[in-house]
Image (cartoon, rainbow, N blue to C red; front, side):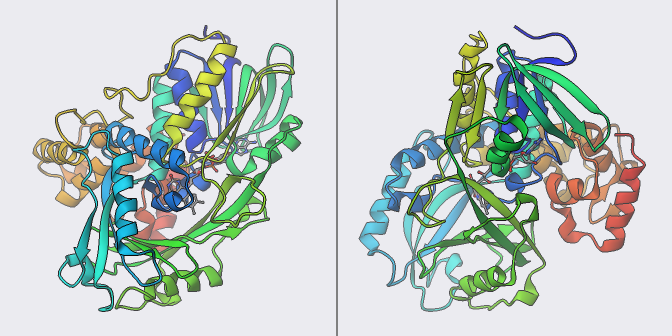
Length: 511
Ligand SMILES: Cc1cc2nc3c(=O)[nH]c(=O)nc-3n(C[C@H](O)[C@H](O)[C@H](O)COP(=O)(O)OP(=O)(O)OC[C@H]3O[C@@H](n4cnc5c(N)ncnc54)[C@H](O)[C@@H]3O)c2cc1C
């Protein structure tokens, strides 16, 4: 089955966001030879700009998107089990207000949400009503919020999820090329010929029996300008932005604030010491790489938080922000926040070599999307391996400490304890950060170190040379941004000089 020659592959995947990385992983695990190309860093675009929730999407119940919610909730369990280091349960508090639906109706919606999500019931707590005058989550809110509803979803480090999918794809034989753009793709009867350009240097020409277009917000421009293939679907690009402020409260709950314009804004505990607030929904017509938050969005998000929290915030409190473009499937006559978040896989196997276009999708459903994609592609490539990624025994790299006897949180705590015993010299905060980010791969980061000093130079915050070296050697990191804003969020704790020092160090690293 595997195409052996160096420049011949079964599958070329264009795009190293979550969808491309997950498809590469699934395909490699089925024994196909795979090349994934990403023009920037892995997760450089939409896949590091999400709200980072693995969720069914409570608000989609109101839009009667039951099948999307059920599919997403089923995935929540699978992803919690496969990557319990970077994915963790999160409890949300929804304060009740007169402009919302009546209490009984919200309660019924949450019961439905619990029911749709009940596969391994022990993993997540069920929803309930809470008296916010008594509950800890009521403390930071204005006194008028007396009643709330508490429900479960999950949180995920989106950018690391992409890297872990790419790592697993590579471990199963795929070639992963970052900073490599597919500049030309030509379809033949038997396969595709593609021209790849790395960092504007010399071109590489490859052949692939099938092509996956997982270019996210670029998916249609890839078809128009690179592959020159006509297509029936168009994308609606919808910008979403988040702000980060010093933490507004100490506890671990997140909040779901339904705005008077019916949009939902989340406030989520972020990176020990911060609160993440988002998102907006704004039609976007520019080029995706030019997406930036604007002053109106910052003002909107501050006002959204100020409607609920007793402590008011202002644009000057914002320490970081990010924006991304949702590549949504175009639907006529609906607003930006109403466009479906479900995905469409457009398989074109007719006129020549197979082409699969990915339109839309969510971080939450990436694994299922990849499985569906391979179920379409595999027959065209004569592959009979079958689906494999939903198996409870299959984990993303670092997640192997999960077991079926314990919830993902219990398994995490047990592994953290074991790691602290193994490396008693690691400060507790650092051990916790390493285990959250790397899981069982912590040993690849620490290497042969026996003391903190053995981890080498400290660049800033708690980033040591050993971790930076690991990220360059094993996780495709090339620049300070790759390390500080995607492989971690240590950028929040680095000053400009420290960033420059790290950048200089990475420029000298063999990559
Ligand atoms: C504000 C916001 C909040 C969100 N919140 C959530 C959430 O909480 N939960 C959730 O499940 N989902 C969420 N999503 C949705 C989710 O983030 C996206 O659906 C998902 O990240 C899309 O991934 P992708 O791989 O399709 O696109 P991308 O991540 O953009 O990846 C596409 C990649 O293709 C590359 N590329 C393009 N053209 C080429 C070429 N010619 N050669 C090589 N590479 C190329 C690009 O550089 C890019 O990295 C959110 C999205 C946004 C914007």
